[in-house]
Image: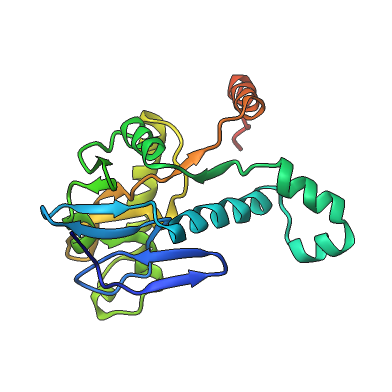
Length: 228
C-alpha cells in the first residue's frame, strides 16, 4: 500500500498539477503527469501510470505542440484554416515533452541528479524527501503570499538560480523547464542557497532536423561586439 500526500490538485485546461508537500508554507509549484506518494517502506515516489496521468501527458504534448509552433489562437485557426490546424495537430510534435519514467531516469543521469532521484517500479523515487518537504521553490518566492517569504532577498534568489542553471548548462547540457523547477534546499537569514532541479521530467523530443540545426548553430563563430 502507499500513502498519497493530501495536497491540493490544480487543474489547468487539460493538465493536472499535484503540488509539492511543503511543510513551511503552501506551495503553488508541483509535478505534472503523476502524483507524489509515500510507499509502505517509507519512500517518497513520483508515481505515474494512472489514466489521468496518461491524459495529462497527452494534454501537455498537445499544448506544447501549439506553443512551440506559435499558434496563439488554436480555435480561431481551426475555424479559418482547418487544414493547417489539422496538419499541425497530426504531423507536428513539440520540441519538448514530458517523458516516461525511463526517459526521465536518463535525464536524471545526464544532469548529474542521481543523488536526488532515481528509477522506481512505480515511477521516480525522490531519494531526499526533505528537498520537497523543507525546500523553497524559486517560483513560490514570487507567487506565494506568506510571512515565510517576507525576509527573503528576491534578487539574491534569482541571482543564485541563474548561477546554478548556468553551471548545469556548462557541465551537463540543456535543461527542459526551469523557473518552477529550481528548489533551494536551505535558507540562511535573507538568503536561499544550495539550489537543485526538480524531477527533470521534460525531455527534448528526438529530431534529426532539430539536432542538425543545433549543431549548425553551435558551429557558427560567435560575433564579437565592439566596446565603446
